[in-house]
Length: 98
Image (spheres, rainbow, N blue to C red):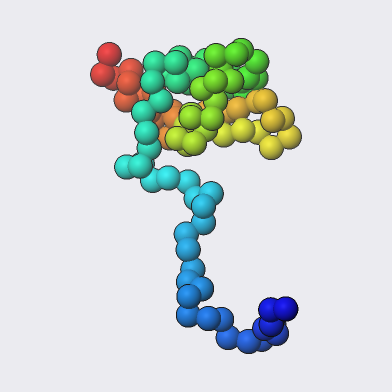
C-alpha cells in the first residue's frame, strides 16, 4: 500500500508546472490546412451566424482546422462553428496574395 501525503504537505521537486495541453497555439505554430481547409474556411466565413458542419468533406477537415485555431465550435451547438480572428486573418492574407 502506497503512502498518501496529506493536503498541506510540500510537493516533491519532480512536480513542476507544465503548460496547459489545451493552450491555443501561437501564430508562428499554426499549420497550413490545405485546399480543402481553405474551402471549408470560406464556407464558414460566408455564414456570419455560424456554419453547421454536415458535409462529409467538412467533417474530415474539421479537426485539423479546429486545432489550427481558425474556427471555434459554439458551446451549445456541437456541429456549428464560427470563424475566429486568426481564421479571418488567414483568409485575408490568402485573398491579398491571389
